[in-house]
Structure formats: C-alpha cells, structure tokens
Amino acid sequence: TDATYDPAGSVPASEALFARAKAVTPGGVNSPVRAFNAVGGTPRFIREAQGAWLTDVDGNTYVDLICSWGPMLLGHAHPEVLAAVTAAVARGTSYGTPTEPEVALAEEIVRRAPVEEVRFVSSGTEATMSAIRLARGFTGRDVVIKFAGCYHGHVDALLAAAGSGLATFAVPGTPGVPASSTELTLVLPYNDRSAVEKAFAEYGDRVACLITEASPGNMGIVPPEPGFNAFLAETCRSHGALFVSDEVMTGFRASAQGQWGLDGKVEGWTPDLVTFGKVMGGGFPAAAFGGRADIMRRLSPEGPVYQAGTLSGNPIATTAGLTTLRLATDEVYAHIGAAAETVKTAVGEALTTAGVAHTIQSTGTMFSVFFTDGPVRNFDDASRTDSAAYAAFFHAMLEHRVYLPPSAYETWFLSAAHDERAVQTILDALPAAAEAAAK
Ligand code: PLP
Image 1 (cartoon, protein in one colour):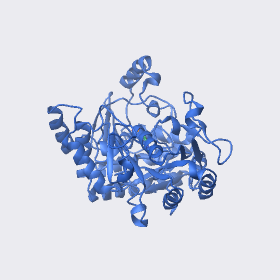
Image 2: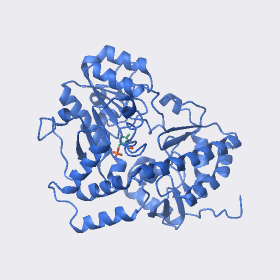
Image 3: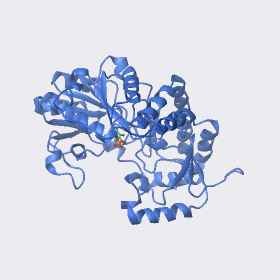
Image 4: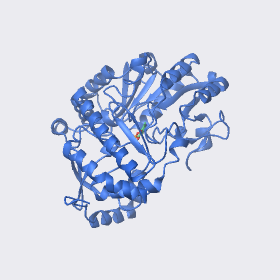
C-alpha cells in the first residue's frame, strides 16, 4: 500500500440503519442484491451522490460502479437534469392526464430506437410483462421462449427454470409462482441455435414470442455470438412469432441506440417489440415498451389488449429521462467507452499479475468481469464464477473506496462523470484487491 492509501473507515451508522431496516423490511432492503448476501458484510447506506461519487451515512466516499444498476449514465445529480426536474416538480408531480414531457420522451425514443410507437410504464418488470401480454394478444398464441440467465424482471411467467428436457416446458423459478404460470414458458440455453431450432420445430405454431436480453447483462455480460440476434429475429419471423428484444439494461447504455445500434442496425433487422428502462428514466421510475405500429395499436384504448398505470408517463420521470437522453451525446458514449477500456485493461492486468482466473466480456460501453476462465457463452459457463474470490476482491475494493456491484454476476457501470480522478481511484485499488482475490 502506498502513502496516499486512505481506506474507507468503519460504518457504524450503516450498521445501525441496517439493523433498523431489518426490523421492518425483509432482509433490510427493497431489492435483494443490495443486502450484500453474496459478498457478506454491511451494505453502505448512501446519503448523497455527486457525479461519480457516493457518500455513505458515515461520511465515507466511494467511486460508484453500480450507477443505480445502469440508469445514471450522466453521473449523479447532473446539474441540468436537476434543474429540469426541480422546475417540473414545482409545477406539480402527477396529474393523471396526458402531458408534454411524455410525448417528447416518446419522440426521442422513437428517433433513436427501432420502434414506431412506445407506451410508458414505471418499471422494467412492467415493460416485459406488458410486452408479453401484447405479443400473446397480437398473435393469439400462448407460448413464450426465454433464455436461462436472462433476467427480465420479476414477471411470474419469466421467473422460470428450464424443464427436464431441452424442449420441455419450464418449472417455477421461485416459490410463489404457480406451475400454471410457467407451463407455457420454454427456457433455452443462450447462444445455442440448435436448441432454438428444436423448440421452434416442436412448438413453432404455438409461440407468441421469444424474449431475450439484447445482450445479456444479468449473468455478467454474455454477448450474443455474431449473428445470433439476427438468427432469432429470422426464426421468429418465419414461424409467425414476435421477437422481443429486452433493452432495459442495454438501451441508451451499450450505445446511443442500445444493443440494436451495435447489431440490428448494422445487419439490417428490426425487433418486433423492444423493452426499455433504466437510462430512459434518468434515475426515476420510468420504463417503456414499443415496437411496430401495427402491433402497438392492438393496445388499449386503440385495440383490445388491456394495459394501464396510474403513474405511467409521470411528468417528473419523463422530464428526467428526456433531459438525460438529450444530454447523452456521442461524446458521452465515447467517454464512457474509453473509461471502460482503461478500467478493463487495468483489471485484467491486476488479476493476471495476481494469478486469478478471470474473463472480461463487453458489449459496446458495457463490461463485466467473470472470476473464471472463459469464454462465457451461457448461464452454465457463468455459473463457474468463483464467488468467494469475487467477495474478497469486492471487499478490498470497497476498503479502497470503490463500490462495485455486490454480486459476481453483474455488469460494472460507468458514467460520463467518471473522470480521471475517479478512474485513477479504481486503478489504484486494483492490485491489492487482485491479491485479496488470489488468497
Ligand atoms: N430487463 C432487464 C434486462 C433488466 O436488467 C431488468 C432489471 O435489472 C429488468 C428487465 C427489470 O427492470 P426493473 O428492475 O425496473 O423492474
């Protein structure tokens, strides 16, 4: 350790809040991964965030590599986003009527992404749930195909684990999901064309849609092999099923046009439906699903497929999202991509020097680090990650003031606010963390 090493201090205030939280909230958190169960220890309760930095309730500062699990593309408390939101709040926070910001945000999304119309909802879960309902309503079919390791939020039909055979229907992935909710879901191994062909050969005329993360980021980053998304789009098309591309994580993040900007746009294909969330809400609860106009027009009130929401298109959330997207210029993506390159290279060097098995995978500006030899093509490969090594690495980074996602299977998120000082803080922390992981 060098002379400038200034470890994060003890966290009595976080510990006290965690104890209070556990008394009134299951596990003390409102979304499970925040509880640090995968890495042990006390989650830092954050009281403030500015740019690339988090400050916990004990006054420790950390470089943020979670970025709210993706949304904070511009960094925290961006002055222009704050100004727009503050002005919007002063005009009232929700009316339950149509408003101008939701029209402008829809126009911005339609301008960037391969969709003709969008409908706003309040979470990525609602977006995928509604997209599946619409796909079923549009096609008049009932079967849904997904991939193991792809997360689409906590939709009953998608909290499914593969059945016993390759093309057999799924079983519930958690208690509380009835078998009847997953008996129309097929779960296939990712990047496996023959599994997809087999499922369509058997059930093709019953498949309403295939839903996939545009580039999976919820088992770490497992990019589609070249042409895989195009193959999925074409397979769906030839069977009269809809291709639903879940860009909740990659949308306006992997590139200005999401994962589609990296493959579909280049290869010349378009998904039938796309789900969005995270960045497009600018740190507020906003998400969307969109797609071909003839499909979207089957939605209520224009068509018969019901879908609704009290806070859908909320003026504060859509103002935050619109301001964020307008500020998300090519320079922003170039900056995040360059910072990601620097961090990836340094992580690779530090882990190699310490003799820690690892694989770094990326898509566009997004990347993740697997503590296993690669390549990682699917969920089985990702599952070989050494979680104990990651936990040691995580805590050493945290002590060195870098807040990584508290799970070995997550994407590391950077922002436009990750400047030289923030990146240098990460680089300085790496050698000791890599050594901790090697023990
Ligand atoms: N789809 C993807 C690809 C996601 O990454 C997530 C959340 O991480 C969701 C859907 C669900 O979004 P939300 O957590 O807003 O419900």
